[in-house]
Image (cartoon, rainbow, N blue to C red; front, top):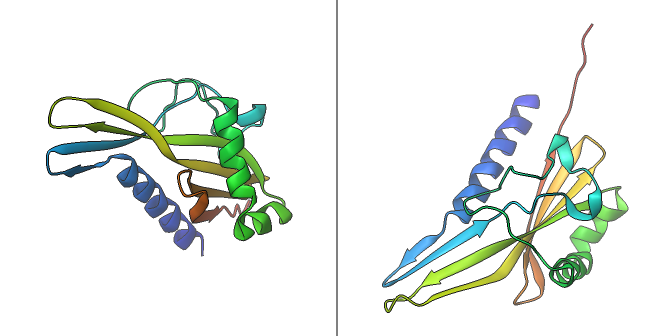
Length: 154
């Protein structure tokens, strides 16, 4: 049971990082980056000891995310029935992390836009979930739920 949970946690982490590394499409190179925002959402400590401030989720460094963007993402997440079930089960939203899409066109024009975000939810010290929110479409596209079981032995 514990090994299954560990394997799922590792695979989920690999999937999130693979998604963040981006793709190449013809003459356009698109990079999806998750950045460190220097702290946790609304001051609530994140799951399993994850605290902000210098530990990025990906390349790029620190950026500032507006409260309006965070509120928009949270509103989208809270309108999803599966996220509502997590909140009813004692999960709390602890972080909002946009995925920044950077596109370099053939002529060198660079555009950046956050069209997707990850919402982190925690349930005490035993569970965490990550909801992927498509900001453009206004919907949750994926939820990854991880649980942790600790068996203390004397």
